[in-house]
Length: 189
Image 1 (cartoon, rainbow, N blue to C red):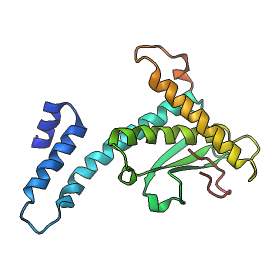
Image 2: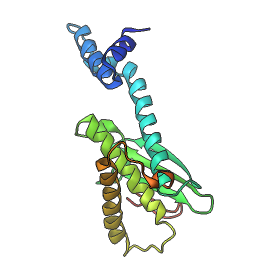
Image 3: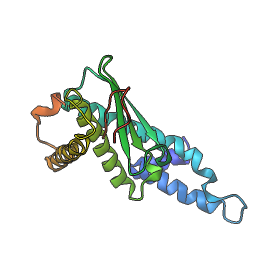
Image 4: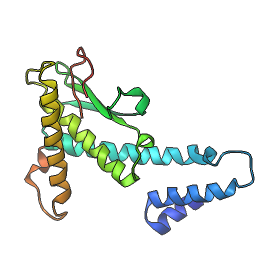
């Protein structure tokens, strides 16, 4: 067991462990020519695994709540430079094969706390799933703006409702569950 695992056990939080270990790593390179973030790849794997786990858990929850269990949905974390300007998420789908791919912004590109970043990533996943739920409706270039506004309001309301619900409440919707477009159509955000 390495000292990072021991710290995680002591503090009860992998996030505290990562922050503390980065703090220790910064002190271990003082006086050296190498930049402080040279130690980042060691911690990146743990952080990435935790992020992937978080995102897939949220995807599973919301996919069920929005009754999209018959879809095979993959999720990809990508850098800001890979998105169109003013875009932080997207989805592409193929209705015939019932497959979809959601892309969300890499946390390294957020300018907010990690906790707020995770909340926004969940909102992005919900936003894209709402697009998928609406994918059977007729779409046009003229309706895109109205659809985006409606999807924003619906996804924000769903997530706000989830976050305000008491943790002990039993939700009937638990058994049921940011942009989706046909693979042949241009990317929508």
